[in-house]
Length: 438
Image (cartoon, rainbow, N blue to C red):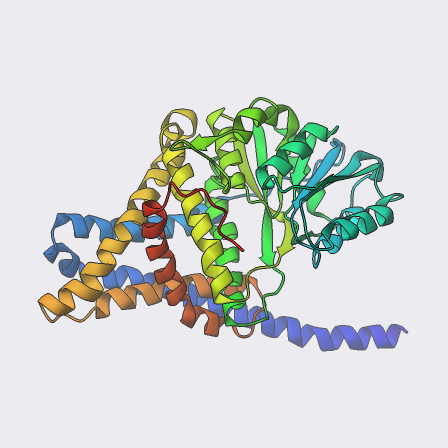
């Protein structure tokens, strides 16, 4: 037995050493790309300035902003475990027509590493027309001896996800509310890593880290896998340094119930431009937390997996809805963030807004206007875009063992361009409150 163990260790060592060598090479590539970006900005600075001071400022600002995300994410530090702090937690899961996933979503609550007498589960069937209710009840039966309390709420008529979340908060009896989407699956250690942040009474919301469950389905899901990882490990980490994460996503996020009760009814009946807010519930809820000067932070160790769209049509509809909620909640947050949160966090927030809305103008100038008007090919612009995407992709490959990562990076530019123009359309159609998924 000892000889077999020694042999396994001997075989594993070269594999481990090879992985470390690969990581070191990738880190060299990562910093090499940063060096290339800086050199390119210095070498072609006159190109941006030729378009006027506005384009020159944009060129410098977007470079500094992107690099600042990596720096701040590096400065983000994990919170130590709080073994003696074990408040009761309430999982809240609203669902409509999620018969394929809801059983697995709920089943996993019984497998988390947390005292079962401090866990309750509240599942809301929001007018489903498939087998969602049956799957909820089947999962509830399996959890009876694994958690303290399970409740399945059956609504015959669809009311909307926001009403379902509100119902869960009102019915909950524990201190911490954990929202989980009906197509997301939590890891066993997620609860402890979410809860430990609430030792700090200033914390009102904690975002977990979400990976893509169906990453290997096709190129589209691989692209989303990179996007998810970067948005959490870089952007949310950077925001969390200041306690100002702007969106605690529905895939996996925890809230202090006593803080939610300060505004949960107001949030339920939120309107924008005279119409009820029917999407963007997670971003909106985070805004309410930040507006009341509570902190919203990110826990990279609290992990979940979510099912993402695997067809282009579904994906575009999802992204359009997300962009509309981003536009709406960004306008709202911009009215208070400078007064209620860390000034540096607020500065980065307003810079990001400016960069997002200016990006389509820059694209038109570089890719359409200058080639047509002056015969200047957008080589510098496209090279810069490629380097940034390669930077994200290399960072992803360093931390995720994904052998086909470069294929997704090569196609990622298409993803970026689509999102840029969806932002324009989201702004134009912001008054349309239809859900827009199915």
